[in-house]
Figure 1 (cartoon, rainbow, N blue to C red):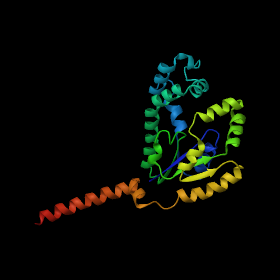
Figure 2 (figure 1 turned 120 degrees about the horizontal axis):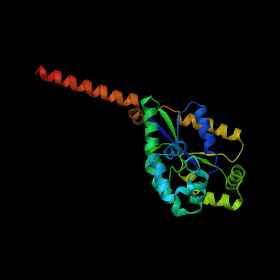
Figure 3 (figure 1 turned 60 degrees about the vertical axis):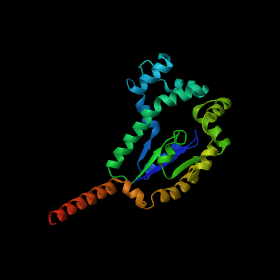
Figure 4 (figure 1 turned 90 degrees about the vertical axis):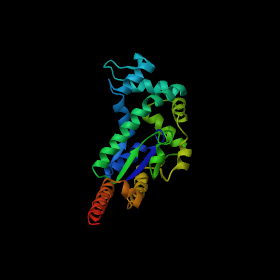
Length: 232
């Protein structure tokens, strides 16, 4: 099984590339979706957040006001670290569970879409790592246009994350999303060829069928050894 790490920065276009993988039939585990699920009303993640940040971050229906919580953590590094620390175990468990379900189905290539791939050290479990990069000017313009925020606020949110240029330097594969969507799609086709290449021996052994083969061969070896002992 091949786990492909997909990450980027805010407004870099990572979600666009994630959508391209899905359209190409490659299963994607989306950490943002997992994160939303683990903070739904009544869950363990929800209880931890309410206890740490108070009832003031709740909507009338009891769900967490994600926009308000986002403003709080983006403006306060310590609170951002606290939030990440509270949710990290729940999100990691959720991601693992989604990967396990796809593994049981026999999927050979799985894309793990994680914004904080490097920050959470989960890049150690993925190979290759794909980083969606965008030049700083385009990034801040897209963020301002997308969220309707001012330049100062947009820059503050960008600065709250690891530098995108650093992520680029750590990547195995880089998609430059600074241009048009057609440009990104053209680069994506090359990336798709790379991540869909035949599995290595090690990756195949990590797949469902590979593990079953090991179990069957081991069982056959044990039975054969027992039979030989009976004839001795």
